[in-house]
Image (cartoon, rainbow, N blue to C red; front, side, top):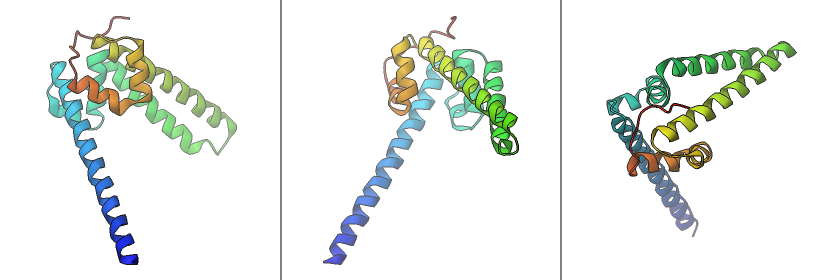
Length: 148
């Protein structure tokens, strides 16, 4: 009896694992397609940090991508030392909030670059995996960086 329960649990776990891997592969393909829709080689979506730079280049400009990455680095450094004193804690919170605002603006510009509005910005923020699949596999056309 216990063997059957363990076998069912193992089968459920394997199904969940393979489903997660399949979904992750779909996300990789969707990111590749987003880059190719924007005229950038799809393989650049596979390299960490490089993909952030080019995603910002698609929606805004590359310098903003570098600024975004540096802001994250600064936030991480401040988080590591925020226990030392309260000034570091407040600076860490401030840079984290600026980073969040920066991220939302970048998502808004990305959605507008593909001809969508504020609703897509909310979708990319709250349901990023689903909206990445929709952006990659959908009929969205790239129209250049947003000018707002």
